[in-house]
Image 1 (tube, rainbow, N blue to C red):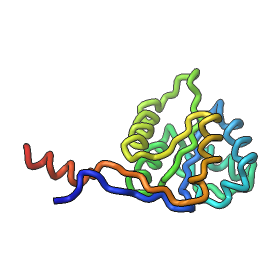
Image 2: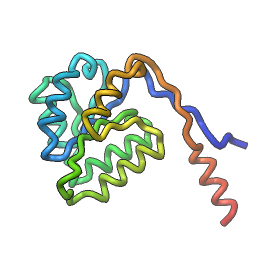
Image 3: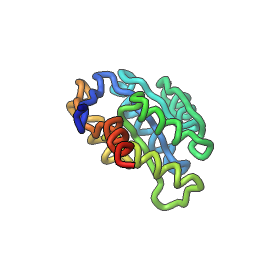
Image 4: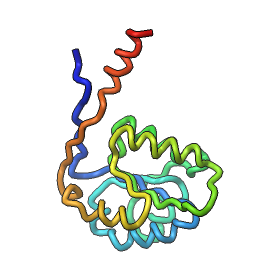
Length: 156
């Protein structure tokens, strides 16, 4: 029988998702510019407008998905499930209501489920980007979801 937990490895080159609410986009762009030398060593993706603006302002290549309210948060969540996003920098705006708040909560939840490092503010982003793990692989243990589903199916 399979183990209850599995070890996943975040590679030396990280797949980093960059996301920002409208009021926070300038702050994320400035942060990306300040950390450009580190970020250019990794694969970057992001939600629509944020990805485009970071690319235009910093010259960093950022693969863009849909805008957050048009499903971009869900696309990034799906990439987490597929093992194609290892790390999230999400400058969220806690003082402004967001029309796609359920999508944002779903993204935060799936990142927690898959034990993905995630910064929701500049201070945390600074700590993460300066971590020794930015330069090397990182093994983390997550629940074996396939086994959990199989076990649950047996009890129904």
